[in-house]
Image (cartoon, rainbow, N blue to C red; front, side, top):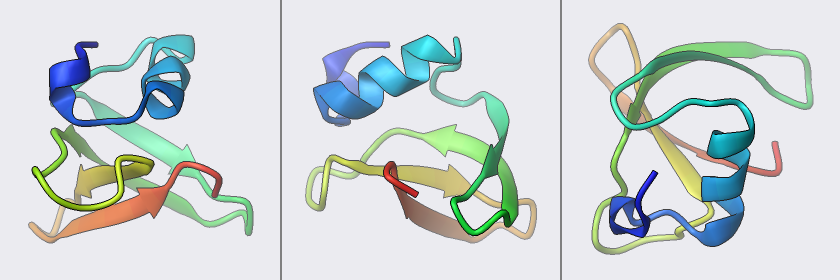
Length: 68
């Protein structure tokens, strides 16, 4: 994935580790064992580059700190 996605190098390495990229559907298990499904979106210009942005099935966008 390109650095133009807006994500930090740490998040880019994590995405490469799991072989996922922008606009791919993913299931993420959080540290509290909750699971979230969504499509990976590019980062907005402003905000924390360590936050992964997902489009949920209900149409909402959320941000998830990569540490969770």
